[in-house]
Length: 163
Image (cartoon, rainbow, N blue to C red; front, side, top):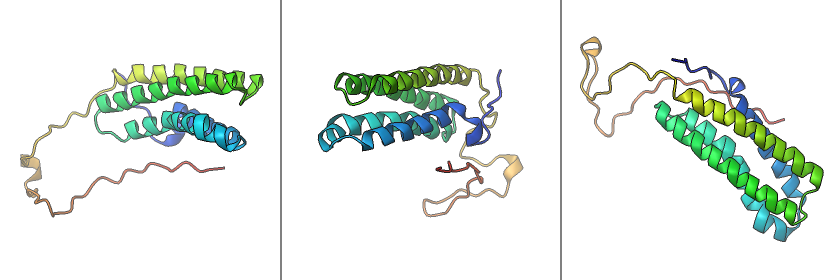
């Protein structure tokens, strides 16, 4: 079995590439006219942004199966992004060099994403039991009413620093 190796966002390489790609597409689409932005541009940006967004949302899930599902959603968004890229190229909204560069970036992200998904099937699940009754080790545990605040562990996930 493989241990889960992402401890900070800096370790999450495919996420960081997807974030950079989203910013690059955003900058390109900003230069388009209103009609192009409204029809192709919005969809193009949303699809590209969803690659990173779904990866990050999956990282926040407790069970690895959920993390894997969100990684599949991310891959779905990658394929949707390719569709909008082709449409933008066919409609002369981006030039050939931008098209080739973005397509190469998407191919790299796709390979990294598939590798990441493959490792998720090998990751160990947490070994704790899931129950609503207190265990002998936690005799001070009380059942919570719906209005009782709960404490959650301090998850330290760094926020990406825009440049």
